[in-house]
Image (cartoon, rainbow, N blue to C red):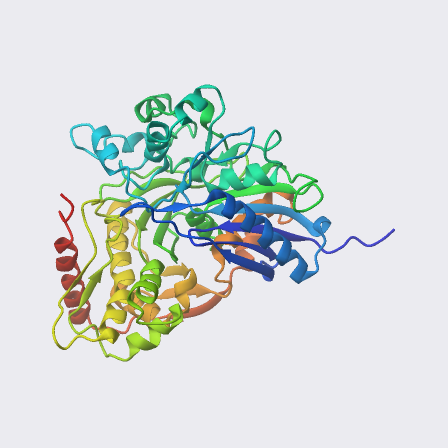
Length: 505
């Protein structure tokens, strides 16, 4: 009898700017990975789109290349997890697999007037007791309604069962499991919880919310847990054999899971395209009075759902890309740190990147980005520094709101995402929060979280304790700023934020 080949877990991370496939071993270490960027499409001011077909093709390609790099055969993959940019909305024909239009990205603002029209007595929180979310352009429900009302033929197609909806997790899993005629149409509680259509308590589609948003229930995927076998890869597809597709988490919840924040009171902040701070509140639903979101954190198989408070910041890493691509101050994103280090402080300059309005805790779609405090003294180094500091200031706003809502005083913050490589930013984050900031050895926590969810479902890992044992500290930053400086800097930031309000009439 031949010895069984070594087993691994694979996970797809379908993000806002790129798609990658990462293969992990039992220790949660990366064996192989491959990544491809996709096009950002801006048809009009405030509109942001992606081509779902390009994303699907990229997903298949990154799987092939990562497997080839590692010289791993398909039968060595015990299972596959999926994590994804949340809220990005695609509607397609289940018989052909053809999308009716480009995917509308989470940053897109075209549903601004629609959201206002649905608010009872101009109250954006009128449905938050049901769905945990304010009425905002961010979420999938208004995007679905916009497509039904504005893209010719979609409403009729939906009535005939020829138009189905998914966030990117649903789209990718549908194709992985066979596509037209075969694909499994599912989502998990963390992604369904970002639509404004799922009831937080029942974890099922809410008939009243479907009616308000004008969404037929036959368009919607079946809601599953975040960790179970949903189906198997099509033998004719990229793997050439059946592999369990067994994990599904929205990207920020996946990062919380990958950071093994399994106990109430544990929190993580991800510095990616946007910035997302999540606090585990356990099986208890904590409603926010401070502009945060209440959202499912994860649900493992038949266990009760775990919830989180979330603060979402629209622009973080994408601000550095904007400085690179639109201003040309740097050639590569990592160069921002040295440019920012060329000055000793921000010189009184504040940069509030409200390019898509302001998310938590303000929820102002009328806000737009500004730089304030410009003088003859300001140079490109100050602009770079103010851009990095903006990420940390926005995180502090969320941090303060979380402490208020949860009555939990966070003693440290676990961090992950691409920007944690920036020492200047991480030190400033620790300084402005006045707590230690801790980065794990494996910083790819989003895709790791999806791998963990899939691995638990197929028995690759037996229990969550094994995952906690995998976590180890990589780097830690300690606060080193006096109270007076901290308070003065933050006061300046709060003044700057107010200047962004009411820009769009």
